[in-house]
Length: 249
Image (cartoon, rainbow, N blue to C red; front, side):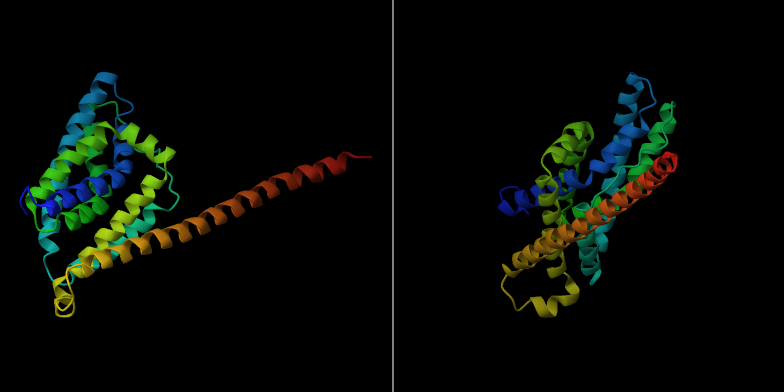
C-alpha cells in the first residue's frame, strides 16, 4: 500500500486504535513495576523498559504476520480476537501485587517480562490490522506504544470517564476479526465469488457479535457479583441481629 492510498491510513488508524485500547493494562503494569524506585530512576525504568518492550513486540508481531499468511491460521486468530474483544468489555480488576523493586535493572526486567506475558492480545490484533505490510506494522506500533506508555494516566482516566471508548475499541477488534476471517486463504474457494465489500460486512458482523456478547456477559457478571455482595452482607448482619436479640431481657 502506498502512502497516498486511503486504505493505508485506514489500516494505520486501526493499528493505533487497537493498540491504545489493549495496552491500558500494560501501562498500569509498567507504573506498578517502577513504583518503588526514586523519581529519577522511575523515569529511566519506564524509558528503558518501554523501549525494550517496543522492540520485543515489533519482533513478535512480525512473526505473527508471517504465521497469519498460512491457511486457516487467520480463522484461528480471528476467533482469538473475538474473545479478546468480548473480554475487554468484562469487569476487570488490576493486579496490584506486581513485584516492585528498588533496583533499576530488576524493575526493567519486570516491565519486560510482564509486557511479554500480557502482549498476546496486542500482537494478534496489530498483526491482523497490519495485513501484510511491515511498513504499516512498524509505523503503527512506533506511534501508538509510546503514546500509551507516556500518556497512560490520561488514557486510563479518559476510558474511566467515557466507557464508550472501551466499547468502540472492542467493536473495532470484532471488525478486524471479521475482516481477517474473510481473508483466510483456507476459505478462498468460498469467498472468491463474492464482491470485495462483503469483507466489510463480515467485519461489521464481528463488531456486532463482540459488543452484543460482551455486554450480555458483563451484565451477568455484574449481577452475580452483586448477588454475592448482598449475600455476604446478609451473613454479616445476621449474627449481629442474633447477638442483639440475646441481650434483650
